[in-house]
Image (cartoon, rainbow, N blue to C red; front, side, top):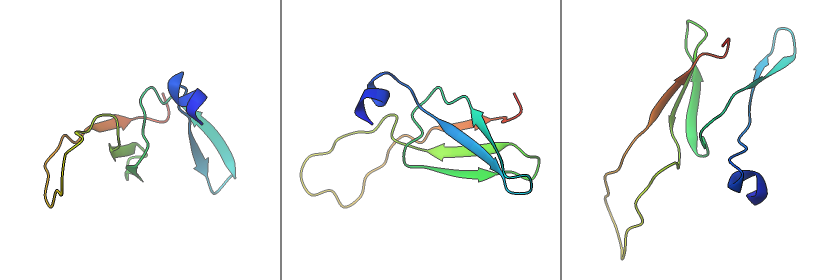
Length: 76
């Protein structure tokens, strides 16, 4: 939704399959195209995304870039 994106209105939801409960998690940054996993201690690890990237010209076969890691505690 372009309107929500432009307003920086990002949303993440944590689902507990045992209780079928959903919890909104504050998402201050764009996490589109990021990998997500829950760590053994219960924290959520999100790595990657499209917050910042370089547009390259021509046929690019290999490119290096910035990787941003953002670690959120869903209980905060």
